[in-house]
Length: 138
Image 1 (tube, rainbow, N blue to C red):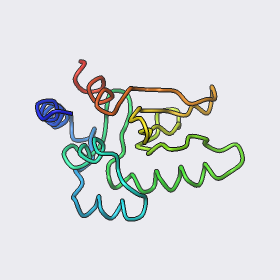
Image 2: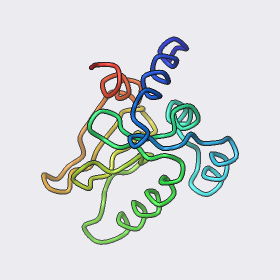
Image 3: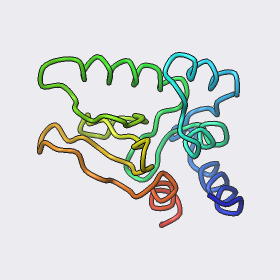
């Protein structure tokens, strides 16, 4: 993501009402999370530091305070019979139907696992495109 696009995303996100966003993460918070759960994908790490988390289009993306619970919940529910099957995905939130969505670590695509229809589906080609559609396409 180039700097001009990052600046536009930060400014657009900052203009959202306070109730639609979480506080930005500090480097210490990010390192603490990573020490337990592993590395945060680059563009998402940048987003947490500069925007925080919150409403992107129709979805809520976790902030640093919500992210640990999401990762624990996803891991626990993946370990049970008929649990989540998405693998190699860094979960960044839950959609309005309670489905996990996240960044596929090998490709950067945004994927969601749909418990009603079954299956794993591409939401976006990248986190950058996800942000563009959710914030800049209005």
